[in-house]
Length: 142
Image 1 (cartoon, rainbow, N blue to C red):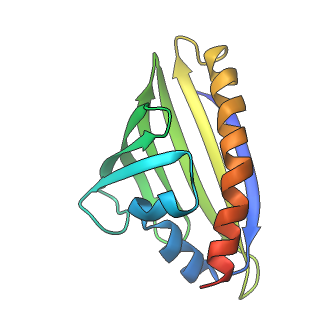
Image 2: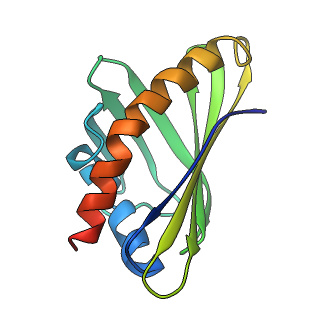
């Protein structure tokens, strides 16, 4: 797998609050405006056996399955995108009692990972540039 994107940012909340908020995948549309709908099974907070899909505002739907789950540390999910297999790692690191660092890493493999993956990363970065400040604001108001 090649790393397509690696993004770090800090939120003003304890790791417990930050995790609890981000674990509500079905509510991501409140801050990730590029996502139109999220389906998660079983419904509720993400867990070790979660599967789901994200429908983007451009009509693309992406399915995923959780492959790693360590409470208050990280979760990973995998899913296809075009001819590639993508892996998304959502990491959490406490920075004292009231701040948490998020690290989001996207890796890809398969046909087009080194070429189409760059275009995917460019668009994904643009979406995150808009979404992250909204998420930071939302978490700071909890």
